[in-house]
Image (cartoon, helix red, strand yellow):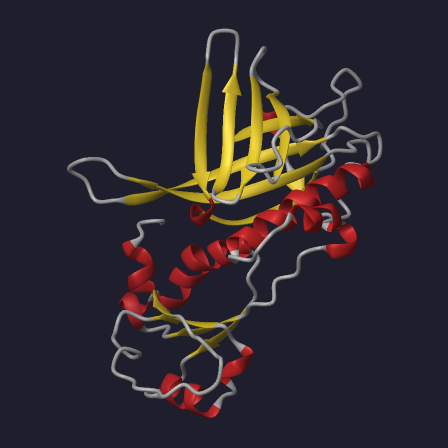
Length: 276
């Protein structure tokens, strides 16, 4: 995980770049990153004394991002005013454990990059990009800029159109709120009796990183899931995740009316991505 510290600069090319800032790596000298947010993804341009190196993280590989604050250190030391990336601990913005002395806003970007190695199955590798915003003297100002990036990234993930005029308003007053919600049907006896633990350990963390709310229902008897779906108002969910290793969904046939579009995903299908 790389922690970058930000210095605000003007966007040089509005026709191609939605947002841009310059960051430097706290643990390395003379190592600077130019981070650009484009509609197709996040561009990381590494600059040092010898060469430039660019890496593009596709927007389709990014599942979410969060604005966080540094955690109050257990032992204070007057000689260390900034947290080192290796010892950085973060908490939610409203946590009582946040460090009031650090005015920085941290944007954590969660991505699962597809790795294609010849002769081996494709898999996804979890990557966290940490951007530290501290151009301003007050946390509120740094937080506002981090939220601008967060909202823009979230909208790009959702496939929404983002204009330059909209980005100006993407701050605390227009804080992105997830309106999708998933229905999770879990068969606790599936997967050798590990269905619930598999969801909690493997799937739930992905949804938390994506900040997607969900309703979890544990099946209680045979055909419970079938009856639950048939008698529920499905319009309150945008998708269904089935935590089971048996084809309890594949054999169902539903006729959907109205604008609702549902994504049926089983844990077996999720594991094909090799993100675990």
